[in-house]
Length: 265
Picture 1 (cartoon, one colour):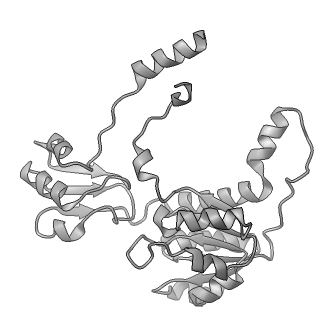
Picture 2 (spheres, helix red, strand yellow):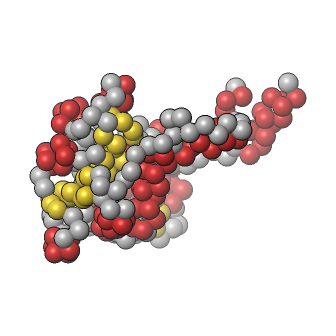
Picture 3 (cartoon, helix red, strand yellow):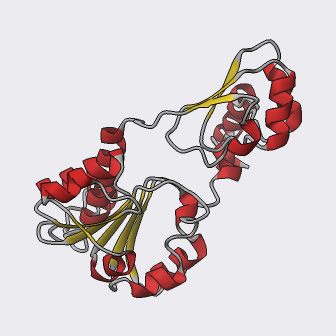
């Protein structure tokens, strides 16, 4: 009971209200500022852009590479938009590999098991990445780094991009194929492409059906690249062996929520 009361008191004292640019009224907070800095789940719509301009804003700075959350057509001739196209490609690519390794070797489960002094290896062995085929969708800065990491593991690398990289083609490290061939041939698929109308739900029910049974899906790009319902169905039927997700299609409504200690309620 005392722990419960202490948790509630802590929650009241330190939980701070969050502010987003998803509503027109919050844009008034930019009054007197030359610019605003937004992140991936801040919805910068046409009404917000108009309000920002009224308040004297001249610049929208994105601290991310993608700009799918900004109505760029509405900004034309009104406000400049800046982004970070080289958003630490090594950090993101290394994180994608870390997710794959953790999922494959069950590092998270092994950690919990060893804390309980259970050192059984049952169910934790995973498989060798060496010799496996990885399909990389999107070969921009992050995709290129991820390809090089996979090459270091001795993996066979397939790539798909609407605009193939001459550098990758000349290197011989990866081979460009059609999206269908990549889906059908890959043991692991990693997404490194931007979210556009064309790539929305790139991995949907039909795409999953084309994949190998037990395929591993990695997404460190944008949640809506993957149809969450189709992904869940694929996991339940074991068509998908594992999903390594740094992003989730429905994360926007939770992104700004401080759920610290909310389990006490």
